[in-house]
Image (tube, rainbow, N blue to C red; front, side, top):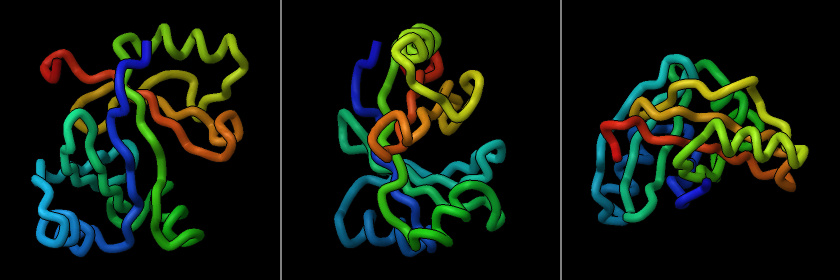
Length: 137
């Protein structure tokens, strides 16, 4: 079951400038950076309990975020909903006709299980489902 809005991801062309904006200009707490090699993404998190803002930037200039930035130049990339059982949520949503960008969940930032719902299934909005790893509960 979906339990919370986990984070809002913002694609940024300059990760350091984005970190500085949210840390210094907006005064948010910086949780740290993490590279997610499988997604070719560098991330930076700013928790705003019970959610977070995640800055996403292409890792080594590659991956889907690079393509997004080329087309759009930055902006809100996706919404992420926290799940307490991602496999059940995937099955339930597939049963309702939702299309996913992969066959099953993969490991994302913070070692969480993640999967993305195709934007065509959600009025043009990319939605991520995220089940935190056991050590995050």
